[in-house]
Length: 552
Image (cartoon, helix red, strand yellow):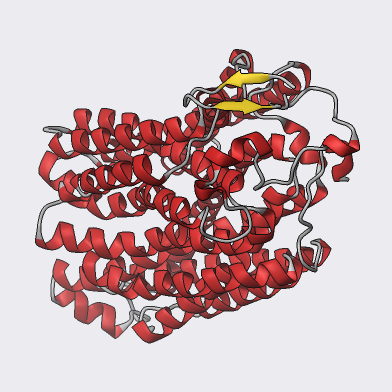
C-alpha cells in the first residue's frame, strides 16, 4: 500500500494509476461514486456513505459553479445587439464575443480532467470560480470591443474547466446507489440556466444595462467560493502523471479548427478554401490525437472508456439530445424576435416554461433511475422530446405563443426525463479510475455536437431560405397583363409598400425553414429513441468493474 501526499494537504492511500495492471478481484476498484476507503473521512462530510447527509450539501454547492458557467452561454447572446450598438461594431466583429469564448472552452475541456487529477478537484474548482468571476468583471468594465473579446477568451478558461470538474466531483462524492437522485438534483443547475438566461438577460439589457449581464457573475462567484470553502470536502489528487503535451496539442488544434470552421462556415461558405482547410486539418489532428492517446503511457483523455458499449451508445444519444436542446434555444428566440417582433425580455418570458419543466422533471427522474435504470426512462424521454419537436415543426408566422410554449414544454419534459438517465448511465458504466476521463470526453462530445448540430441546421436553413425566396420571386409578375394587383398597389405606395411585402415574405420563409429544421431534428431524436432499447434496464449495479476489459 503506497501513500501519496495530496495537493489539498490530505493523504490518499492506495491510489490506483490508470495504466497499472488490474488489481485482484478482492482489491478491485470501487464503483464510481465510492472513493477509496482511506479518503472517506475527508472525502465525505461526516463520513456518510449511504444517506444524503454526506453529499447533498457539497452537491448543492457545486451547482452554483455549474449554473454560472452554463448561464453565461445563453445570457450573453441576448446582450450582443446592445453591445454592437454601443461599440459601433460590425456583425462579423461582434460575433467574436461568442466565437472567442467557444474556441477557448473547446481547447480547455480536454485538459480539465488532467488538471483535476493532478492538483485536486476541490482546488481546481475554487480557482475556476475565482478566475470566472474576475474575467466576468473584466468583461463588464471593457471599454471597447477588443478588450471585451480578450476578456471573453480569459473567461472561457474556467468556463471549460467548471463542467468537467463539477461532474467529476459528483462521481467522487456520491455512492452508486444514490447516483440517480444526485444527478437529478445536479441537473437543476445544468438545465435551468439555459432557460433562465434569455429572460434574465433580456430584462437586464432592456431595462438596466448590458454590462450587468457580466457583473451578475461576480456576486454569484463570490458566494459560490465562500460556500465551497466551507462545505466542499477535500478531494485529493490522484498522482503526478506527466502532462500529455502532444495529445493536448493534437486535440486542441483539432477542436480549434473544427469549431472555427463551424462558427465561420455560414459566412465564408461551406465549400470555401478556408472552411475546407480547417475541416480537413481538424479531422487529421483528431486522428493524430487518437493514435497518440493509444500509445502514450499517461494519456490526456483515456480512450479506453470507449470499450464500454453503454458509454458509446450514451454518447450518441447525448449528441442527439444536445442538438435538440440547443437548436430550440437558438431558433425559437430568433423567430420570436425576428418574425413576431417581440423584445428580448418578452421572448425570454416565452422560453421561461422551458426551464420550469426541466426543474420539475429532473429530481423525480433521478429517483426513478435508481429503481429502473436508464433504458425505459431514456426511451420515454426521447419519444416525448420528438413529440415536442413535431409540435414546433408546425411553426408559422401566425402561430400563437401558447402553441410555442406547448411545444417547448413537451420537448423539455422529454429532455428532463431522458437526459439524466443517459448521462448517469454512461458515467457509471466506466471504472472509478477512468471517471475524470469519461467526464472530460462527455463534455467534449457535448461541445462538439452542439457546434456540429447548429452548423448543420444553419447550412440547411440557409440553403432552403435562398431556394424559397427564389421560388416566391418567380411566382410574382411585377408588371404586364399578369401583374398581381397587390404588387401594383404596393408599387404605388413607393419603397415603403414594397418593403412591407419584402418583410412579409421574409418572415414566411423564415418560419418555413425553421419548421423544416425542427422536423429534421425530431426525426433524429426519434431514431435515437429506437437505440435506447439497447441500454440496460433494472436498478444499476452497486459495484463497478476494475478494468476496461470487464466493460464489454
